[in-house]
Image 1: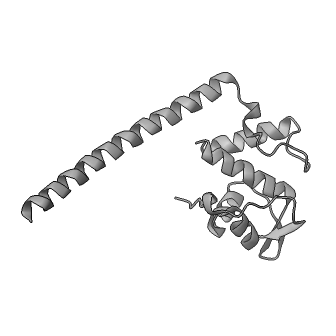
Image 2: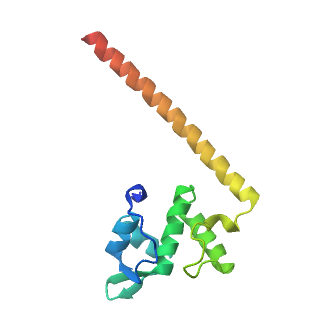
Image 3: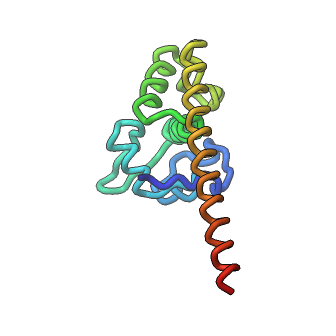
Length: 148
C-alpha cells in the first residue's frame, strides 16, 4: 500500500517553481518518493528525465494534485487515469489558469452517484469495524478491572 501523507503536505502553489526535483515534489505534496515513482510507472506522471534525475514541471504538479484529489474522493488509480484522460480530451489539462480541482468535470450524475454509494458503503463498513473494536476494547478493560 502506498503512503499518502497529504495531510502533512506543505501548501505551495504548483506554479511557484519552474521545475522541481522528485525530493521537492515529495516534500511539497507530502507523498513518498516511491509513490511518485509508482505513479510514473503507471503512466500517471511523466517527469522530465536527466539521467536518473526526475524533474517535474507545472503540468506534472497539477496532475499530481488531481491524482491526490481523486484518491481523497475514493477513486482507484485506474479510475483516476480515465478521469485524467477525459480531462485531457476536453482540453482542460493545460495552463496555469486551468481549474486544478476540476477532476470530476467529466463525470455524469450516474457516475457521481455510484461513487457516493461506494463511499457510503465503505463508511458503513468502517463504522461497523469501529463499533466491534470499541466493544472488544470495552470487554478487555472490564476483564482487567475485574482482575484487579
